[in-house]
Length: 181
Ligand code: FE2
Ligand code: FE2
Ligand code: FE2
Image (cartoon, rainbow, N blue to C red; front, side):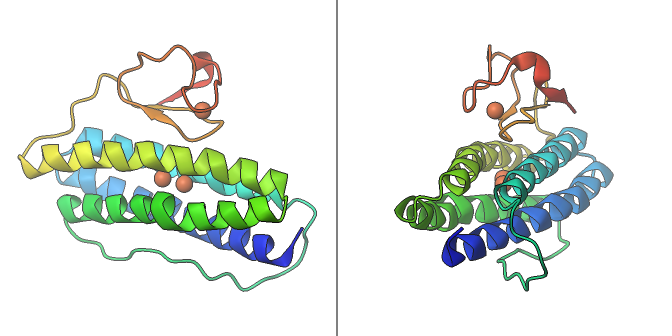
C-alpha cells in the first residue's frame, strides 16, 4: 500500500478510535444529566466509530509494526449541549475535510480497499452529524431526544432512529443485522 494512504488510514483509525472512547464518556454524562436517549445515541455512535476503525484496521491487514499516529480529536468534558456541539464539529470535519481528502488520495493511488473503507465511513458520518444536531436541538429545549428506536448497522455504521428502513440505505445490509440500543 502507498505510504501516504497508509498514513491517512492510520490517522483515520486514530480519529475513529478516539471518537469511540469520547462518545462513551459523553454518553455517560448525558445519562447523568437526565437525557437517556441522547446517552443511547452516544453509545450507538461510539460503536459505529468502532466499526469504522475496524474497517480501516482490516484494510491495513498486511502492514505490521509500530507507528506513531497523529489524529485530530476534540477534548473537553462539558455539558451535554456542548458535548453534542463537539460531536457535530468532529463529524462535520470528517465528512467535509478529512475523508474527502483521504479518499481523493487513495483513489489516485488506486488503493481500492482503503477507498471502500473510507467511503462507508464518510456516508455514515453525515448521518451521525444530522442525528447529533437533532439531539442538540432537543437538549437545548430542555428535552431528551425523541426516538422510536436507536439502531446501528454493524457493517457500515449507519444509525436509524425510526426503524423504517428495509435494508441499510448506505450498504444494503439486512435489517435483521441491526443492533439495538
Ligand atoms: Fe466514523
Ligand atoms: Fe461518526
Ligand atoms: Fe450499513
